[in-house]
Image 1 (cartoon, rainbow, N blue to C red):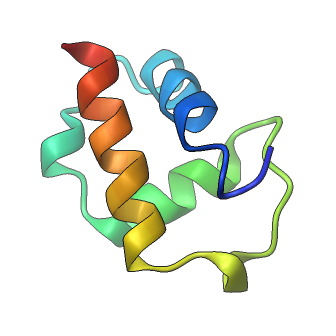
Image 2: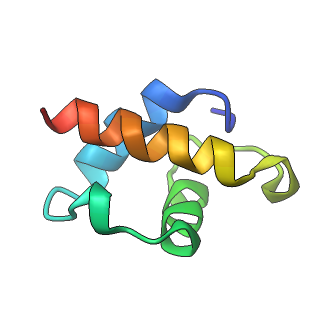
Length: 64
C-alpha cells in the first residue's frame, strides 16, 4: 500500500484505531499511524500535507 491508496488507508485506519476521532488527529500522528499499518510500504518522503489531508478526509468519510 502506498501514500496514494487513500481509501484503503482510511479503511485500515478505521480498523486499527476504532476509538480515534480522525478530525482531531494531528498530521504527525496520522503519518506515523499510516506508516505503522502492516500492509503499508512507501517512502515517508513521498508524503505531504495534501496527502495527509486526503487520508484524513477519507477516514472521516469512512466513519460517516
